[in-house]
Image 1 (cartoon, rainbow, N blue to C red):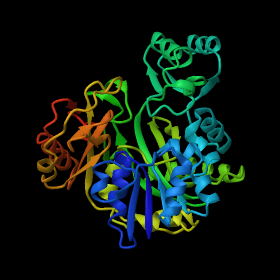
Image 2: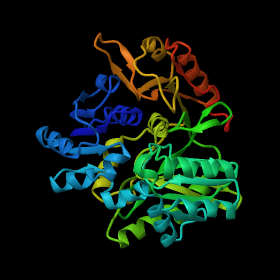
Image 3: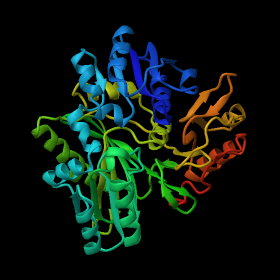
Length: 422
């Protein structure tokens, strides 16, 4: 099979890495890719959000399966365009992708499906949003309705923080049009889990869980980011809880979308809070998480490619996935200044030595080659240092041993990834 992976981040590097191991694969290409992906796939300079360009590339290269990584590509209708061109595509159509593209649409679907989620209200004007915050008090959560690269959520500990979030999103438009509408909801308390399910429009199978670290600093301090690290499995997420989330969240939401004529095919990523009253949905994303995808792929024993095909072809019922009896961890190395103003263009050295640490796999997230062929930072989250071990402690030790060999003074990482489990 010829496979095209769309995207150029750490998630797409992990997907390429897993797909490259499949005996079904005859050719792997990626657009736009990155220097790490280029070691295992042919990279083409076509942007992930260039829907027409991706479709043209897939047709020109006689691609059998398009695998879409980023959410923005899906909300722009990448899967619809592929279908119209007769191309098989892993990822939901545009209407189903609104689950991530609009927080208020997610709430509408969750409520219609009877899925447990936080109480909330939607606002298009600043005045009523401020009044709602005054009435509800703090802590409270303010979310930009649209896509904001994982940074459109403010968990406000005080009313002042919440009002400032409304100002930044709705008046200063720090997230552009994504913040023209906000969803304000109750602050759920508990452990947050990232749970993934493969879906074929009708059926769904569990794809495992991970725990992410959203805040930029040790001890879960500082602003929210796209994710500073993750580990899998998540000890707090038992088999019983997994079965409950499948039954109360995933299955009914799939049925509701199908009822509306928007069947969901792809990977459904449920952000779940394990509260004292039971698991509740924080959000749905319509793609693999980043960096959770890296942690999951490190543990996956089954061939990923047949699973992606089964999701596309409506054949997931009774499909089974096998997992290594290992723990995995991914520690994100970010550029100084992230998440506000990451420093770009700084040289990264020492990756060859870091990759020699037993159990380590390095994923490129925001790298490029400069005009002299040097590997440089080209983003906020730049590298994902992944590792496996018999225990999470063993995996973490390997990951941080590898990080110690990376020569990149302008980079930083959290030193406590995995602390909840350890």
